[in-house]
Image (cartoon, rainbow, N blue to C red; front, side):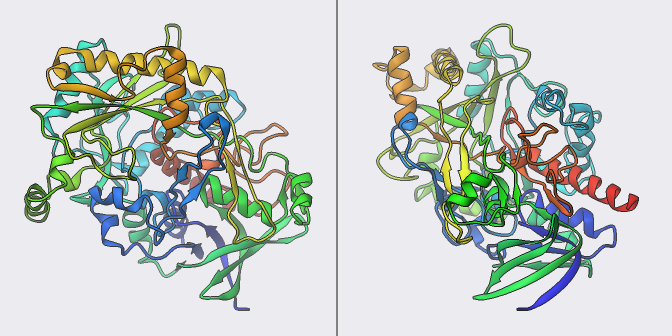
Length: 534
């Protein structure tokens, strides 16, 4: 069994892990970064429109699935998670959405000291390089390139116009002073290519001699000396290897893999660990609980007199788009998944938006996975952004290579259903506005015959899906149910932190990649600060 020693060992080269590797290594310490998947060489990773072909690609994707649950139609719901350098930032829809200021103030009110909006804004600004917006809110010199869409189809402009006609104000920068209203999407993109954390943060970090990156290295166990974490065992090329950390191990595997690794290492709810044959090293009941995810439903329209991705993705138009991408760096191949969105409130009296409506100028055949429809269509995703429903991620056996059991428990809270129904009403109001109505042939999903609250709820449970934003399974807080404290140290242990989306106590209002990158930035700053004081 090979062995090596570093100051810090990071498990997971995803949205947070690559940030940590960069920020820690630039201080001069020795850092090892372990990634279960391969290098990010798959060509479709780097073409933004290639995301559709990555969502089931086992070469770069864990391809998890939930347990069938009655609350979501007794279906196993596909959960793509990045298994490649860059993690999910290498296979996601590239949307850059920070969330709402109230999200982070809410974290602080729950006891997460130092995580208010005023506390985290400097790390958002530090991370990004964006040309627009207000200097008070936007960063200009960070590693993460954020851009506006280079090519916007006319039907997206019609959506933005229709949303204003329906009463939603135009917002020129939903990552700026305010989030509410309708606006155009921003993306993490490097020129015409995807801007993952592997191609931004990690690319510059790999020039430093103090960083070692190990790919195809599946972490199997955290090494413990009493209550101190001293290293990690991992499997690489069929060989079990050990790597030790002189200072700390930082787990950045995400909301599925981080709690799973802790549990199979003996850190978690003792009764559950005993039931699967794992010796309890540290009884920590919150590990794997508090799972939260964005569950969504779609309103789909057949359209006329408007070009959509359905046509652009087929020859001969696809050949034209390929030429545009190669020679001009724009066109349909630079698209992510959503070109514009609305942040709104489901009812009066709310302090901040709790709904996100995301437009995609495309529609999919419900009978065939990721197959675009033959006729022009557009889809509007309805996303309750701060769900109250909670689920679990639990190890099903002591085997670290076995898949964890994922039970999201979607729409189990009645208020999540209420918000979803409010989203249907708002979506239909936008489609009925004149700017879009002139292009609409018919609502194909759920269809205008689905109108009553009970019918719409049934549709959401039968056909809803995830927006791929699981968080919360190693919840941050200072209470007995939390897994990590406000400095992301695992409660009751030394030398071990968790830094990724799993530490979020609640979901943010919107997509989670940008907040996870912020967590990586803030975690690195705290780790270096704590290291200097030791």
